[in-house]
Length: 212
Ligand code: VGL
Ligand code: ZN
Image (tube, rainbow, N blue to C red):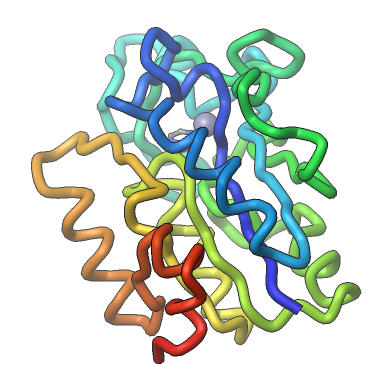
């Protein structure tokens, strides 16, 4: 079985949102178009308590973009975003939610961030996504969404680590580019660990399955 993993297609990552990704809303119609091509569709949702420690607002004397040490891990500080039950945390309204079988929430523990849709950044806890894919005999995943250089990248890394055949739908992603070139570097890093970079068109025409 194969699965499409839609990463963080939430209002706060869309233009006008709290942690806006340029052109982020452009991938919503791509997600809708691709969903029918997969056996299973799941989504991840960044889902922070209002006092989450990844927020610069929770560390005196810091600014957005600073890096601090959080329980031994380097933590980039972000604007307040994707606060549980807020409109900003909701999936984009145009997303064909009826085709999404399960939504996996992450970043719920105030003390640790979670970029990957599978595990938090310290691999302390899982979201349930790996078990769900295993139960459904999924061996092949395709990842797309926001943001290429953070949550998409770490979700793809973990998929590879879990032994899944992992595709990255390049035009189905947009990045933050905190530093210029971060998105290109993320794509290179993903390729290097074995992620197969494909396009939405290749999935629609069936070309993707022939790619190795
Ligand atoms: C993300 C930064 C903070 C993402 C989530 O979805 O890529 N980035 N939280
Ligand atoms: Zn977050």
